[in-house]
Image (cartoon, rainbow, N blue to C red):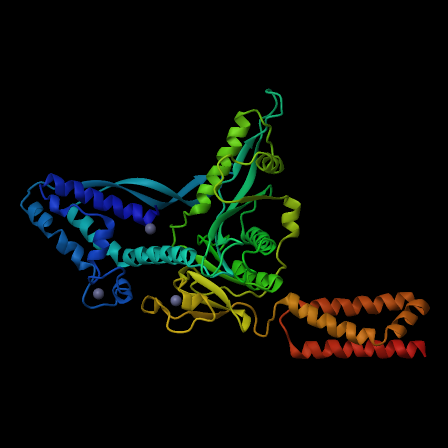
Length: 498
Ligand SMILES: [Zn+2]
Ligand SMILES: [Zn+2]
Ligand SMILES: [Zn+2]
């Protein structure tokens, strides 16, 4: 449960207890019922207008109205009644470090509170201004995830991923008196939902699989997520279903360091280019990220614990990987693939550094992000995901099934204008470069024999300019001067040989 939900639930429970005491059992309620009271009556899902507090027929005053009988009852009391409850608060904290410096930080703390019922009801009513939309988004994103998994097109696949808490391994092969050191292992499970190879359009067969990534690299950042997503795409391409997988829907929480930041967004285009697929990133509502990958992570940890108790020596990520692969679980629920990525491989698997990426304004408010097919330097960001067949199947036409709940997507320029994935641009430039050069290989080779130093110097300077050009924002003038430079180098070579 998220802190928002927990805090409001605490307030409602405190008022429930008081209502019970005052012999008003009909006031016993829960968070969802209170939230629903503040919007117009609905069937299934409230109207977006009500949720966004733009409707004139409903609003948060209904909370106070509902508690009216309790307020009247309390007015008759001459004692000043207070109710107690708990709250999670991100409270500022200061402490003095070893160097004697005072450090200011923030820490989540559970705090005991007490308030007059009247004030608590006002607070609750105030909370509902933003809580109802939080509840709405959490419900909506859940429905979209389920909807996709139930109606998955043949060439698409849905994955849910998250970091588990690191596995902490106590060194076991040391003698008891030796220093006990704890070794951490990164554990990143991915739950995969896709079609089996036997799946047919008339008889779809959707299966659950998992890919578990283990590493001794402890960085939990966007680059690590890039490396893991890259492995995932490779895994899916090596194990196609009834046909090649063309679209991957990736669900994750909205952790800004890992999944939901400008760097993570810039990786969508890179991965799409590299693998020739479409990637769509979906994000759960803030605080509601607990999903199937959680259970997978817990199961892996249990298996390792049992093996260690059984006497197996597991001291690091590689040994954990070997132990898991050598003794697969007895009860199998869907196929599971375990991959080990050494720290060295992780640093090699880092995405190419892209400078000039722009922060997407309002990043945290978006729940679905994808590249524009016609221009991968731009992102299409939507406040909510939609996985209805009109939105995810290119061949389907007609209005989106959920159109009345969705705001139109916004397009953001993520990379500098004129950008086409640097890797792609590098390959175009390389073709031009080799075409010009190949046309006079003979001359270049002759230069290599008569003046190897000059030959090398020319090649290095051309190559330097080439890489500079390939990995900076595209500029027509720079490009022209690059081509001219090659031509003039060639002319010089010709002259020398003459
Ligand atoms: Zn919540
Ligand atoms: Zn309304
Ligand atoms: Zn739709």
